[in-house]
Length: 332
Image 1: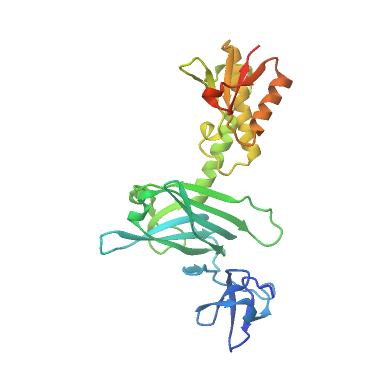
Image 2: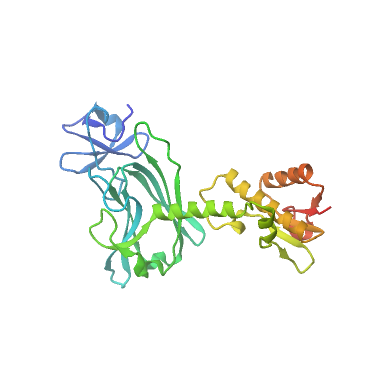
């Protein structure tokens, strides 16, 4: 039997009934009974009484081991997805605890995952499904434990039943260091919260990252020859006489985690064309483009442009310096 969140069920082997509040495996669910206590149960021990479509049910949704609250209120205050660090009492060793909450102040369901990046390693901490206008406690951590964090990573997919356009997955890498929880500008009251905490507006951060990416695409695409000629040269003159350009995406823009491979390739090729044009205007004899040694898509596209659109020739970049990760364009 397939169960869904919101289904009303009866216990097969004992008296009682409840509402499915979370799916925690292919054969296990969480069931909320009348006193708001939740049980983890096998699906085979339940009988479905009605589907979520049959009656208006707005259950609380929980992830095992953490608490959550949900309401039927409309979105008030600032709409969006927030992560909040709520300070607790200091421990015996004077180390303060923080409760980490994810706040969904939207009218959409959100499937989320929460990771931390520590010393360059990514660690999964929690995941779950949030109903609209709800908050989840997803982590309890000592402040000293955050000293080695590099990022907080939150991924989410928004969903709203009915005729709605499918939403693009949401992915944020929030830089985090030992000073993050001491900056007063972050300490305030988040929507749905009853106390102040260190609040990070993930929706706003995502929006700014997307705007920065679009701005960067516009910047690397000159519109006129005059603009092309006035662009700042983006190459490096090396000590051994080479002119080189690094086409790795992290060298070109700061925010690219939510970009598709096609969007990244477009930026890299635009940068290639711009730098090649600048080298021609500067009357350079050759220029080396560092493309890396991945699947070879960028390299093949560069070769295609050189061979079909220009009179220049190409050869592998000096292997002693670049290995197999570069191509040298001889300007003819």
